[in-house]
Length: 449
Image 1: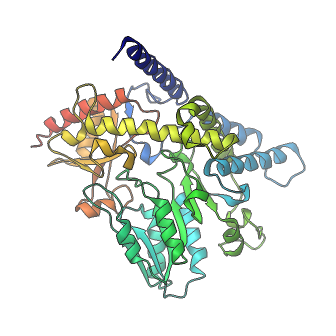
Image 2: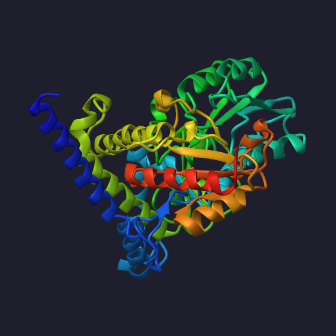
Image 3: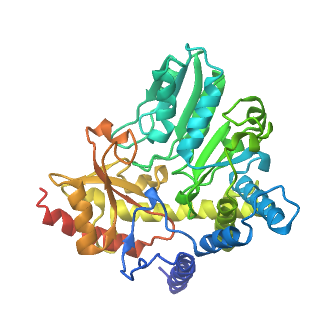
C-alpha cells in the first residue's frame, strides 16, 4: 500500500471506531451490567439490550400520558398523539403504505395466533399451509393448531440444507398447490442466522393464491424490511428484539385488515387498526418504538453516504431508516466473517476442532446470514458450556432446550439443545476476538477432540 492508502485506511478505522463509540453510548449496558460486571453480551436473539432513549421515552409516556384515549383533556390527547406517532414510525420503518396498516400486540406469538384465527374463518378443512423447518414455534404452532383442529388438512414444512442452513426453495415450491392457503416464513432463522429469500418465496405464494406472512422477529434488527418490495400480506416483529421493550407490531395489507374477521369485542372499532387490537393500547410501547426509530434515523443520517446505492428509491425518514439497516447489514457481515474466519490471529469457529457450527460456516458467504451462531462442543453439555463461558470469561450466551430456542431447527441435526451467540450492530470485532479466545479455552476445558 502507498502512504496515501495507509493514511486513508487508518482514517477509516478511526472513523469506524468513533462511530461505534457513539453507538455504544446509546446502550448503557453495552459494556457492563447493572451490577457493574463488565461482560460481553452475545444473546441479543432472546432480547436485545435496550436503548437509553427508548427507556426514557417509555417512562415519560407512562407517567405523563397515563390517561386513556378519547378524552377532551391534555393527557388523553397526548396519549392519542404518542400512539399515532408510533404507528407512523413503524410505517416508515417497514415502508408500509399507511399507519392504519400497523397494529400492536402483546407478542409476535399472540399476533400470529390472532392472525391464524382470522384466516381460519376462510378455511374449509381441505387447505394446506406451507412454512419451513427452521421456523420459530411462534410461526409454527398457530398453523399446527389449525391442522390439529381439522380447520386445515395439513401443514407442510419446507426443508433446509443442513450443511449451510439455506432454505431449499425448490422443495418449498414443490409443496405448493391449488389448495395452499398460507405461506408463512421467517425472514431470518433465529437459530441458524440464515436469510430467507422472502421475495421469491412470496412470489411463489401469490402464484397459487396464498396469503404471504413474514415472521420478521429475528429479521428487523439485522436487515432492512420493505413490505411492499417483499410482496407480503402480513409482517410481524417484536419490539424487545429491536432495542425496545416487550410488545410487538405487525403490518397488514389494508384491504385484508378490513375484510378479515379477527377476534374482537362488540364495541371495538370495525376498521383497522383498532379492529385488530385487543384491549387498551399501551402508549408507552408506541413511545418507546418511536425512540428506537429516532435512534435509527440518527444512525442512518451518519452513514447514508456509505450505502447510497441501496437507498435510492426512498425519501425522508424512510430513506434514513433504510440507510441505517443497510449499514447494519453490511457491518454485521464483518462480525460474521470474524466469528467464522477469525480475527487478529485468533482462529474462527469454523476452524476449531470439536466445535459444531450450524448454518453457513464459510466466511466468504456471510452475506447469506446474520451474526447469529448456534453451536455445540462435541461431548460437552451445552448448559455447562454456557455456564463456563459466563463464569470464566464473562461472555453472556444462551443454551436452551425444550425445542431449542423455541424453534424446530435443531431437530434437523438430531439435536435438542445448542449454545447460541447472537450479535447485533453494537457488538464489536474486539468482542468477537475475546469470545473466540474464550471459546477456544472452553473447548480445551471440556477436552473436546
